[in-house]
Image (cartoon, rainbow, N blue to C red):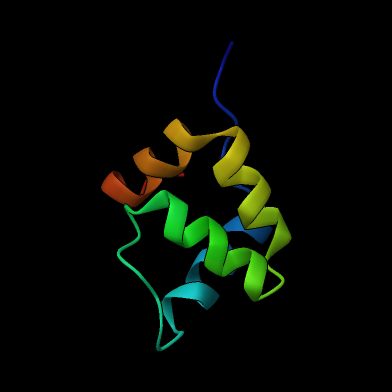
Length: 64
């Protein structure tokens, strides 16, 4: 099964989350997931839940 790519919406939500004063380390997927739910960034939350490896690869490399 191939990994899903970062969509424009998920990318924008990651960038939005990074601007928050309470933004955790982006490698802390549990904290990012919870914060994304709290801030109504549901596409990001879903992506982290279903495509954790693709999310982590993007945070590590920046490649979409």
